[in-house]
Image (cartoon, rainbow, N blue to C red; front, side, top):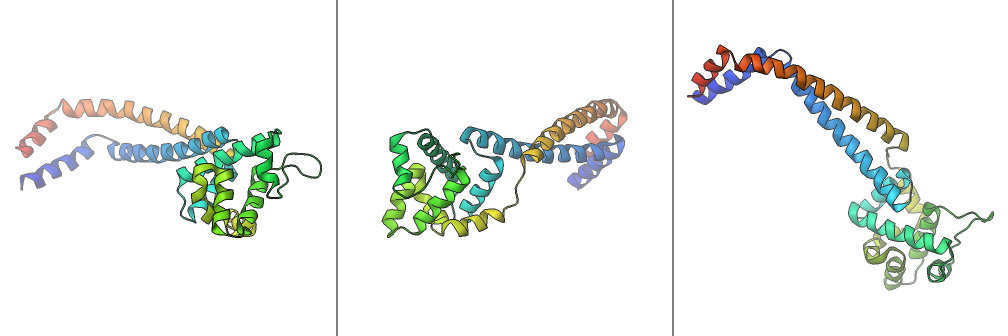
Amino acid sequence: FRRVLFRSGASALLGLVPGLGAFTSVAGATAAIKSLVSYGGEIRDTSENIGVSVEFLQRFRTAASLAGVGTETATKALAVFNQTLGSAIDGEEKAELKFAKLGISLRDSSGQARSTEAVMLDVADAIKNAGSDAQRSAIAFELFGKKGLKMVGALKGGAEEMANQMAKVSIVSEAQIESLDKLGDKATEVFRAWKAGMAGGFADVFSGPAVKGLEALSV
């Protein structure tokens, strides 16, 4: 019975501080926005560290997840692959050979380096067309490192299947990530303003007779 009375008294407190209900709503909205901003920031930072676009990173991760590959595993595998590809494009013989023996071109007809996505799709076809599971695993290990063994399932369907999966993915664009950053900054400003305004309201309530009533209910 006392707990019921205390809860009733606590609920009544919401009415004693003007705008407290709205304050909690603002706090919740701010937390949700910060979560979105954090997600966008992680995508941007990871894409920059690996050297791929934010769009391709999200599409690749999702395509991998459909084959049961976790985000961390897919990200690490992609980082190794892009590093190997970069070395090959720069002329490192050992890295070049890894792609050459699969018949994969690193440059287009105009001599420009092909994109990570384009080369990745060729690798997917190479894995699909490999003569055995052992060969598929060997290709994946050589191009994606230790995490590559878990990537076979995501790649063995070939280029067409992987491209279709990636095309269906809903992504956050670079421009949207920038907008989220700005929204996050604005949300923080609004939340701080609300906290400052509520501080005065709480001070008035907790220095007044209302507190004595709540204390009595809690005994």
